[in-house]
Length: 305
Ligand SMILES: [Zn+2]
View 1 (cartoon, rainbow, N blue to C red):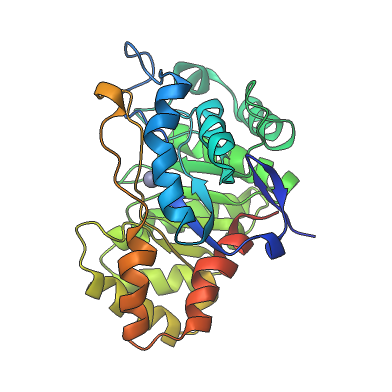
View 2 (view 1 turned 180 degrees about the vertical axis):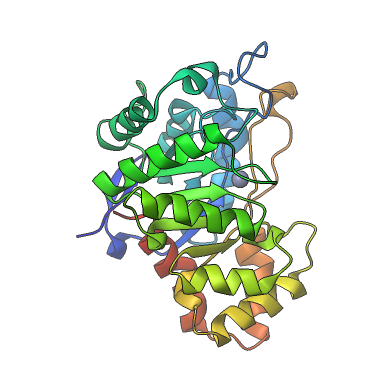
């Protein structure tokens, strides 16, 4: 039976309701090797982020997917500290971000070595955190996937094929996603275990629909940001009208403790989706059952294995 692997252990669908599929607890966008990169006290991260967790728990959100890979400050131990302090399950990724954030060890590693590392994190756990990775986060350059990013994606496809873990990729252009799907298919994995993260950044909605028709997940995940809610609502209506609602994820890409800022800076709350956006989506005519499918069933199916 499919389980969602979280900081609090594996959870079945019946234990979960609404899941936020793309948020962040801790991110460092400075490059690996910068002074202080990825460093913070667990007590400080908990002090800043536990109230943000409490705010979405109060909205009856039941879990959140942390989308930070290696390269942009992934710290599974700090995410776990926030989870333990709040009793809130968080889903953590293995994987590596795009160039120029790829750390030196991964640039030097072979595809085999990266696949083995991902498998270890998916099966045994991340570093000394005691947390298993549920899924694989990767990325590709805006103008096309580089040789290093291709190596990492091929390794992800192999680790995914061995475990059932979904691959999510930060990819800004739909034509780059098509190249990525060809790469994972050539590596023996399937488009239905691929999430196109940041689909909304591609202005051509025909590409959103084309990728979803191939079975991949599309994700509108900057809700509450600069793109108007009405644009998201119009696109969601088109996806639903095309019969592709089973391939759609909604989230905010918000948060987080930033160790580059004093005391971690000021996080953007995760409450916009349930507090503001979903009521507007309902008012536009999308029924409750469909909203539950988009916000509870879909994220579980995407990330469980
Ligand atoms: Zn993100």
